[in-house]
Structure formats: structure tokens, C-alpha cells
Length: 317
Image (tube, rainbow, N blue to C red; front, top):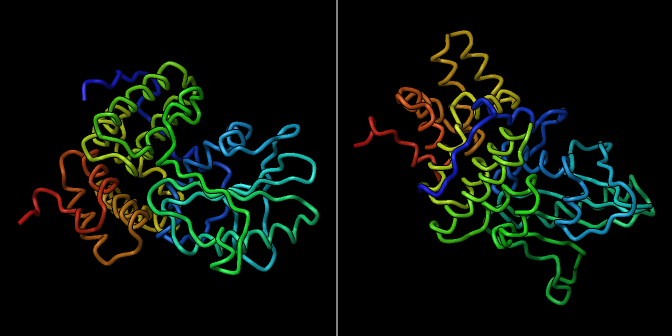
């Protein structure tokens, strides 16, 4: 673990809130396939910061300057993750998925219809960016399904980390490659060093992206070291959840009771956003809030695979 370079700058204050800046609509999410607000915010900030780079990553040619389009469809609350004008009468639609599921293809087909209705006579390319596990199926076998749609899928777990090392904005995506933990440590060290040298004003935000994305594809030892190096704290990661409906409700309850209760409410919001509503969330957050190391509480939540993993040491046995 000594391969990680030291991190300086950024003041230790991370910026997931900034990743959500400008997002006014809370989307309805399928928790099994959608990235969840925290992963969604990271990919949204990363792709929209450099639209041309995002197009290049997805293999989409661009004519002129790409422009992100803010689209609201009539008669539905659905909102696309990213829709970009990439040329005259040409559009690129991107959805981010924490893991692949059977409902992705039907949803992409629904979005295709909505976009074509709002932008007639436009050529539309559609892309799914899968951050974690699973395979998207059912869209490219006409003989079997009597149906096919032109859909491009990018599995970041299979992407060569080197392809991201020339661009500091996309460098955190290298942490999603499924590789041996020892190799992941080396990749993380390279990414942190690159961001430390070239991150500039976005240093804190990019370091936070590393900590968030590493949870998907790294073992716990690697994640723990990355969280340590990026100085993630309960307050910094929980700040993001203040923007969600669940987080706002729990934070308000916390503020009425005091600082300790607020931390407990923020941990409950983090548990709820990661695993969905559960009657166990409040009790688990109460026990986690009693841990002397707040960063360890965040680590337990972000690396847990189920609610059963969220048992702090003082409640074991």
C-alpha cells in the first residue's frame, strides 16, 4: 500500500455537491441497474465537463462543438442521463448503469421513442456505460428475439486503464478495471499522482471521484487506502446526500436534535441511498455513528455488499 503518492491541496474538503450543481430534477431510479445518485453525479460531472472527450471515449464523431441538451419530455417524468448534439441533425444519448440488468434495453427503446418524437429527422446513437458487473443482452439478436436495436455498450470493467491516463478528467475511470488487487494499487497510485500534478482547481473533486468509483471494482484494502489518501470524511461524503429527498428529511431531523444526531441522520441517508429504504437503516446508522472514527463508518457503508455487512465492531456477536 506504500505505492500511493502523498496528496496535497484541496484543503481536504471534497465536492460531490459540485458534481450535482445544476441538476434540478430527481430521477426515478431502478436501484438494481442505475448508478444511484452518487455514481450518477460523478459520471454526469465527468462527461459534461468534457463533452468532446466523452464523445471520443464512446467512439462518436463530432462535427463542430458538442452541446449538452436539457430535455424535458411531455407526459412523463423520465429524464435522460446525457443527450448531446454532436453535429447537424445528429444526437448522442448516454445512460450510466451501476450494473447491467434486463430492464436497460426496454428503457433505452423508450428513450429512443421520446427523443425521436422531440427531435424528428435526427440521427440518434445510443450508449450505455456500465460501471460494474453484468452484461446487457436482448438488443442485438434479431433471429432469437425478432427484435434488434442499434445500441453501443461500454463496459468500464474491461477498459484498459492506460486509455484514461492522458486525460485527468477521465483518469478516475481507470479504477473500474477488474484486475488483481496488487495491480489496482499501482493503477490507483498512478491516477492519484496524475491528479495531484494536473488536477488544478478540480483537485478535490477528482480525488473524490477516485474514492467513489473505487468502491465498485476494488477490494476493501485498496478502497480503504484510497479513502485515506483522498481524505474522505463522514461530512464530505454525506454533504452530497443533503440534495436527495431522503437525505433532506433525515438531515432536517438531525438539525433539530443536534450535531451527533445530524451525523447519525446523514449516515442513515447514506445507507438508504446505497441499499434502498430499509427499517434497519436507522438502527445501523445509530450504531455506526458511535464509532470513534467517522471515516471508518463511511468506509463500512461504501464497501458493504449488503446490509448484513454493516455491523460495527462493538455490536459483533
